[in-house]
Each structure stands twice: as structure tokens, then as C-alpha cells.
Length: 499
Ligand code: NAP
Image (cartoon, rainbow, N blue to C red; front, side, top):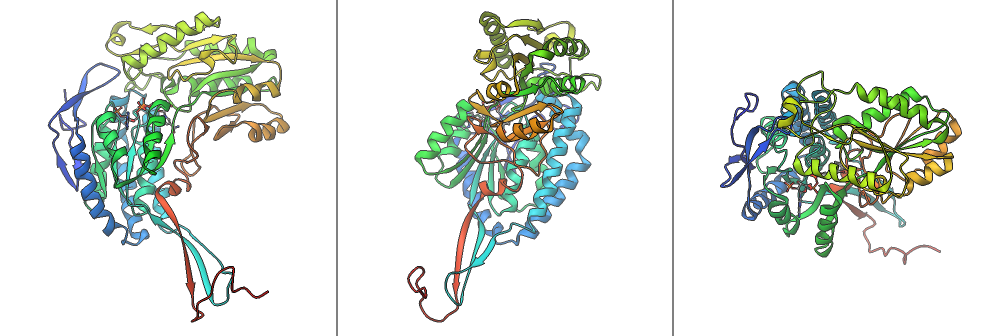
């Protein structure tokens, strides 16, 4: 079934400014209804080769376009996205399942990124610095890298792509983008927008297909010099190994096991709101989702009571219905993983206070829905408190002190996001210093990143790079040091220095 919003029953690859049909395809399923939204091509390695060949040619020209002019394309992209925000948001809900309010937020993130990165077209700052010798000038400048590969996950089908492709393009690279097969519609729509905005042919190429075929071909292509990946740790580690062997630059943003800390002096109502939004928003399928609540034992019972009351009010169903707060799980595999963790949690001895089951009443039986779930009396070493579940499941871990809370927060292999609810200024400053995650929130949940700040995590979440923020430019540029000697003679650094 083709939706009226999409106006096509089959997506096509975007290669050198042309729309090219794939030989094989697979259906894109709306996780809320089980209906087929559209067919997406399953391309092969030959299509990746073709894309790289045209991208290489296009990049040479694109790199010579002054950056402020490159940025003009992004301003136009931002404006078109703004005009289409509602349509894009609905399509996003249909392919991914997140509720419309959140889909609008995600599209807005892309719009913000367009204008922010367009602004970088007039900055892309380098540095000038004194040279150590007379009549010599020294500076460092950013250079584009060439053809870059972008591999994105299903849970943020447009925002993450804009965090990567916009800095890459404004910096003068050409892009090959492989979106997740589960959610390809936003890639198709964004490519159409770039086309309308006048991006020269071949600067952005979208190749649909599986990770094991298209993604793998990108990772191993000699002429793709950077891979920017967001997805699971398993895939990220594999890609990092392959890139390492080829000395290829790789930026990884992977999973999280994010915690909200609730101290004994916290505003509990605010904490409850923050936990609900970050644990059950997007049905817990955010890399920054809160899946642990580290709570001071003196307020544990009160927090549990209030959470249970508010969880009862969460409406679950198709996210296109504005009254719905929690949408479906992306697919059956995701649902089965969550169910498995419920059994693990029970067997480990955590106490199930709410949820813990699949929802199949009425229309819900057509999609994959899971009840918002609360475990309590979990311990920091349990698997449900250590491993990424990627569903609407949160585990309360009681602690006796601020110091213990920090230790528990940091006692996982991941390091993406953390949050603390407290009204004690000393604790606020100690927490922002001692929490070992890439993102720290004070008196807010674990989600809600703004695009002009660096996004990413420490430890097992990433490999030191950042998406979004000005830092994203570091992934897609090389630093070049330039020395200009205007003395008219050969001066030797470190040697011809007056004593
Ligand atoms: P995934 O299974 O690792 O897939 C991510 C992308 O990699 C998809 O496009 C996938 O393609 C592709 N891929 C799979 N195998 C590949 C291979 N061998 N070579 C190259 N590409 C390959 O992850 P996901 O399930 O889509 O996403 C959920 C995960 O992403 C969670 O762990 C979440 O925490 C993480 N995430 C992290 C961030 C962050 O910024 N830290 C943000 C969002 C999500 P196909 O699926 O089409 O096969």
C-alpha cells in the first residue's frame, strides 16, 4: 500500500542526481500497523562502486566552490524542510513508529542543523600563528577529505543523517549515504530536498540496501576515506576493525545505558516527568534513553509511587494519533529482545512493579507494542542494569549516597548520557565533573540534545568523535598546516634560530 503522502510505491537510489530503480527490493513495514508503506531497493556492491565513481568526480568540483556558496544550498535545504515539516514528520512516524510530537521534534533537529551548518560555511575557522622564523607566516586550515560514507540507524532516520551529511557537504566532501533498510523514507525525502535545493549532481548519493552488502561495500571501498557510523556496538566494533586494517578514518556513535540519578533533595515531581519522558519516549528506543534510575534510598518509595501513577496515564498506540504518548517497537526482533530481558530481570531477582508484557489488544495486535515497564530493587551488576535493552524498560537501583550514585552511574561499559536531579549546587558541580558520560543533564532527563553542542559518548559508546556541534567538522576534514616563507632564503625550522 502506498501512502498518499509518499506518492510512490517504490523508492529509488539517488545516484549522480538521477533516480535509479533497484533490481531487488524489500517492503518497509509501518511498525504501528504492520502495513507495507513502500518498497525499498536492496542494492549491491556494484551500485556502491558506481556511486563512489560519480562522487569522486563531483567532489573535485564541489571542493572548489567557496564554502559560503556551498552553505547556500544548506540554507535552501533548511527552508524546504521547514515548509515540509508536517509531511516529513508524518512519514517519519509511519516508517519508524515514534509519536508525531517526537517526529516533529526530530525533523526540527534536522532543520536546526541545516541552518547551523550553513553558518559554518562562513566560518570553517582555521588558525594563524606566529612562525618561529623571521619573514615567515604559518596557518592551519581545514581541508575536505574526499568521498565520505555515512551509515545510519533506524531510530533517528533524519536527524542523525543531518548531523553527518550537512557538515560533510559544507566542508566540501561528497557523500555516499546508506540509511537503515528499516527506515529509508527520510533518506529518499532528504535527497529530493537536496535535489530541489540545487546541490550539484553526485555530491550526495543515496544507496539503499542491507548493511551486510551495501554497508560492507562502503566500509571496504578504497576511495571512501571516512566512515561515519551510528548504530549498535556489535556492528560498530566490526566496522572499526575493518576500517582500522585499511587505515580508514572511522567515527562511531553507538549504544548507551543511561541513568537518571534522583537525590534525596530532588524535586520529585520534576524527576518523575524527566524519567517518564526519557525512559518511555520513543518507546525507549533512543541511544540516550533512560534505562536506569539511581535513586537515594530515602526517596525511593515516594518516587516509585509517583512513577506508577504517571505510568498509568501513558497512552499507547499508533503515533499518528495525537493523543498517543508511546508508539510501537520497531519490529519483532526488537520486541523479542525486550521480552527476553524481562525474563532475565525476573530471574536476576529484580522486582517487577509495572508492565513486563507485550500489548496485543484490538488494533495493537497488528503492530509490536510493549507495556512501559518498571523494575525496582535492581542491583548495579544485574544484566538489566548493564546491557542496552532498547525498549520501554527502566530499572530502579537504590543507593545510600551521592558518591555511590556516581559510582553506579559510571559502572557500565557505555558512556553516552546521564542526568541528576538535585537542588544542591555543590552536588551539581561535582556531578558534572565526575559523571563519565559525553552528555550530562542537571534537573532534566537523559534526552534532549541541542544540535550546536557536541553529541556522543565516552567508553564503549564511541571512539572519541562527536556528531553535531562544530566538532562534527573534525570528522569530515583534515587539518593542513601551511608555512609561507617570504624571506627569500632557505630558513630551516629549529636550526636557523638566533640563540
Ligand atoms: P545496527 O543494526 O548496528 O545498524 C545500523 C546501521 O548499520 C544500519 O544502516 C545497518 O544496515 C548498518 N549495518 C549493519 N551491519 C553492517 C555491516 N556489517 N557493515 C556496514 N553497515 C552495517 O543498529 P540499529 O539497530 O539500526 O540501531 C540501534 C542502535 O543504534 C542502538 O544500539 C542505539 O543505541 C544506537 N544509536 C546510537 C546513537 C548515538 O549517537 N550514540 C544514536 C542512535 C542510535 P541495515 O539495518 O539496513 O542492514
